[in-house]
Structures are given as C-alpha cells and as structure tokens.
Length: 361
Image (tube, rainbow, N blue to C red; front, side):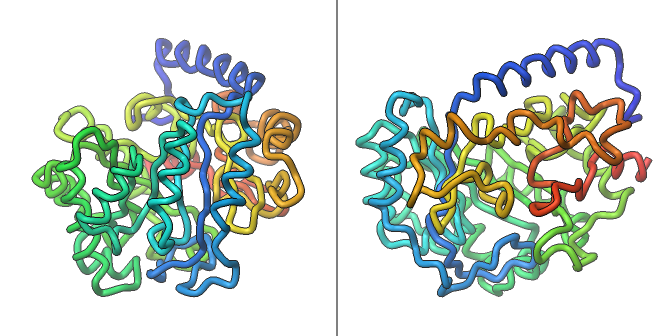
C-alpha cells in the first residue's frame, strides 16, 4: 500500500473529518478522565515513560483529593457519559480500589483501569466489577521470553496471561489486550493473535514505542522502517479476517492506512475530550504529558476552571506547524501529530509515523 497515495473517496472522508476535529476542539466536551492514582509499580518495564518504583517517592493521592476535583466538574460533564480510567504505576498496588470504585459509581461515573495483570485474581476482578468496574486493559507483550524481557519480571507472562483469560468470563465487561510491538516479539505477533483468539479474547490493540524515556536508547524497542510499515499490513489483514477486533493505538496520522488499521481516523483528543490528574495533582491531558503541557494542579486550581479556560495549546495547535510539519501536505489531518509525540520542554516533534512508514516502503 502506498501510504501517501490516498484515493479520492478517502481524501473526501478525511477532509470532512478534519472539519469535525476543528468543531470538537471548539466545543471541547470533557468525557474521558485519567487518574494516575499511584506511581508505585511491581514491574520494571524497559519502555516505561515514568520512573515508577515499588515504593515511589510521590505518595499515592488520597481518594478524597481526587473526588474533590471530580466534584468540581458538576455542571460541565454528564457523569454517565464520562469515563474515568485508573492508571499508574500499577493501579492494583492501591488497597482501596473497591472504595474508589464505589465512590465513583455513587456519583454516576463508569470507570475502568489499565493494569499489567500481576495482581488480578478472579476474586479481585469480581470484587471490582461489583464496585462498578466497566472496562479494563491488560498488557501482553508476546510470549513468555519476549514479554518477561520487556516487563523485567520472570512471573509476568504467567500472571498476565492468567488474568487475560478471565476477561471473557465476565458478562458486560468491556476489555482489550494491549501489546507493545518491538523487535523481540515482532515475529510472533501472528501466533499471539491466534492464541488470543483461542482464549476467547474479542479485542486487541497494538502500539509501537516512541523513542523517549527509558525507550530512547534501546534499539530493540524500535521497529525497523520495514517492520514498522509491514506492521500495518498485518493489522489490516487481521481486521479483514474478522476473528478478533484489532486496532492500532491512537497515535500518529497514517496516510492511506487511515480507515484500515483502527476504527476511527486519527484524532489526538488530548485536551479536547481527554484530561488527566497526575499522581502529584498536576492537571494534564494524557498521563504521559508533563512538564510544559501541564495546565494546573488540583491543590491550587479548580478542575472545571482549568478545563474551561486553559488547554489553549491543545485546542489551537497552529504552533506545531514548524519544521517538517510546516511543509507537510497532510498537516490539516495530523495537526502536528499526537501531543505525546512532542518534546515536553521544547514542543519539537520527536516522531512522524507517516515518514517512518514511507521509509519502509
């Protein structure tokens, strides 16, 4: 597939979607909130963008502090249409998740979590579901050798795979399995797909590692241009087979692969529909956006006021039209790529998916 030769029909669809994105930016309806509820973690992942430790220097945020911020949103969000997702660190390191879930459920919010699955037993999963858990994402990065290599724990694959096999047994629980594609697991993605299907898994998501944080200097985490390009052919073919709902992650405009490898066209909703509260109380968009992308702190700022009156750099991204973006014919579809693909101090673009794919073709 030629990534830059987009058929007329798809170009028309992309142009209409670009208008939709501009309108969404103006309205900026908040409907998805991440809570980085802890920085503690029981793994030592090679690609981690945070300095997560078993005993993190930043203490877990008290539930009362988070709820106070959430309650400030009254009148600007519709609770039952606003998803709250717990992330970390490892969310299951907290011992009050049932109380967290109950308090959110009482307020009318559906909630979910992202986990490595190490601490997710059947008893724990059922307990959380009874407290309102509606969605869950578990990571599985290949089979035993490749998964444990990435996660830095020899028990990780066994425990994660056991947790994943619990998911189809829970009625009405929305879930997916997410895989970080890298050079260690690239050649086993086909077998991993077939294995997930045999386990009854309905949804799978693949993402690629951006060269930042711990991943910046590890060449094994970066696919070659050919592998990167071929990955999207693999995803496209798997989607057409229809045996498992496979999506590529939300990052990056993909040219002609748009509409082929995920359910929606590329749209970085950070600061447009998505906000996050970080472990130290910082108010951001996606949890990976820190430093100059932070808009306030719940210890000193009203969450609703911050959402309504700040986030300007997210909603008007004309500042990103520099460097290679300034001369790119697809800028109106990409708007400078996902915010987390930019340097958090300088705003410089770190990675262009479109160019990487073109290098591999």
